[in-house]
Image (cartoon, one colour):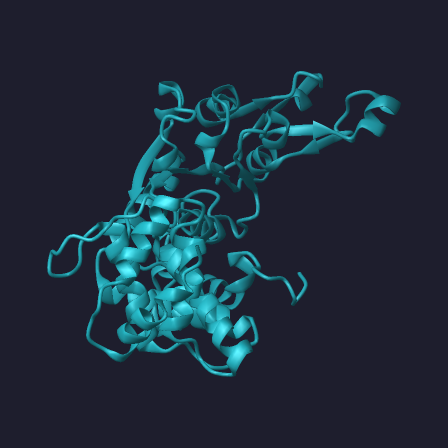
Length: 358
């Protein structure tokens, strides 16, 4: 993979760690797994003794339950608000269990069964008719044939009839290819195959999953980070890494990040630490969005002035994330910025309130 790739998959980003875990992994492994369950857990939650970084900040028991669900060969469904790291929580176990996280289907209104199961090379199809040579395997077929984890992002964005193409692979562990004949017309799942799917709770009701499909998944809810210090630490580490990859050598200022994380939490929860009511925005005020704003603040300060960003830059970067195209949310954000608070960066935030567009 090119060194200029903006975001290599987890198995590439953390290849050294995975190799080290495999070298020291003496535990029993579930059939088809590249690592034992405990080694996969260490890959996600970290191990200082082996120099394994922590990649998920949250409830460790969620990781334990998810890995056990995968070991039972049931599908794993991760649900939660947007920006709660559901995609990361599907990528990391897939990399640990299968050694690859790239067998991925991105769900959407236009997703078809061909993009999930298989399609055809039409030049060969016309010339030779249906044959294994003209078959083009999609992620589901490859995952079943190779015994790998398949990731299905935003499954509830897909039409119900498209979702239900997973029923037979998850229950009978077989995928029929009716265009072929003989043994090649059936693909049987190999050890290690399963599906990790994600769904946003805000999409609930868009394309509600059938009861039959729900029965084939173990559901886990991913909640926002409850602790302020934990969220601040995560935003700082992720923003620092993003800024470094963007050519910014100055780390983000801690006091600016404290203002940023406080702002996001108050606008997300509708109250401050003392319990005073604040306007709650309808937009997504997630940790992931906070990281994006911290990245933008650092870029703005560094490339425009040659310094880390300030709370004034935060005002300029907030509208596109917090309010997006909602005039009501923009008005709430404007009222929030009118509040005076103690501290240099809070003063800078208040003084720069006029920078809010609109």
